[in-house]
Image (cartoon, rainbow, N blue to C red; front, side, top):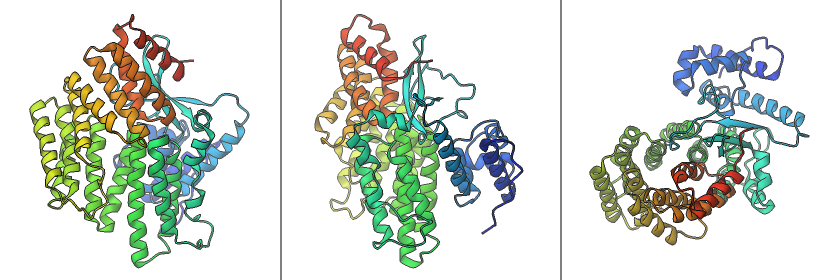
Length: 474
């Protein structure tokens, strides 16, 4: 383990100090900007500005530096100290800071008000990305601070989502272990986070996941044998969960980072099923990012790794099928979903694996509906989403919003503007409550698609609600 490098003499201000330490760690590990850029998937120009202190480094960039350069949390801790100090200085402000962030790839024909959209992205841990209508009618995405988000939620909901104290992991700096096994604490916290996800969305959970992963990395130093293996496996599961939260939030760069981190960690555990599941999840993420080649290739790899009769083979086939829809190949898409159903029917009825237990025929069909929408078969897609919504369990609040938003887009594509506006209003309410980027991206698309129906009452009600629900351009 190398010693902490000597930082460059910082210029005035904490932003410059952080940048100087980031550069010092990079120099200490012997990377050029270009080399590190390829490893963490950020542009060298943004990294250079962050290191000089000319532009504030995002939480995701600092985390990527810390992990890749093996700084063991030094850069993350400095970033958090700077943010905490800045928060105290601005505590008395009436309005939260608002950052404009780039929109996800599902939103077409929209633009963002940034010179460098990928490099100026506000991280989801800093705020919630929502669509906003500009003065000239365009949709952009803006980020509301986490404090402002919590102000819009009920006190009970926020407390339930954020109160991880009962199941929190021991602090890495406490020096003593709690009476109960810390692995059990972490397992309990993960279950609570998963339960809360469908009720409240990802934003309240992301900081908790990141704190728990930092605790786990510290605990791994002191554990050996089976305890260490179990903790490493749990760390992998947390990284995959972090990837899912960021994916739902619409922060695809962070989702890619944590999903790749989970994949790397899974190889250390020797758990083939966990590795296969994370590969399948990478295919799902690629589909959300509208990358058909990645979606198909990774799904094929996951299906090839799955054990015969495994549920994971059907999971991988389901996610990969959407890649054909993104390519516009309707016949191949239909065959792929039929193949997913065949795999589901052939799988072991008493699976021992916990991964993908939610997969059933209805799950495959709701993914087929999304593909039908992309293939232009809007009426069939709308009907399929309707069946999925009717059969969705009551606790799946956020998923209901996602299905409603996608159904509304399908209805608009089918020319049923009145019903599209009505359905969009239902989805919008859930989108505001959960902060799901998957919902807001679909609603931004719906807002554009409904633009030609000026005389339809429900369309105007939806557009008015969108205007009231989002921040207007200053």
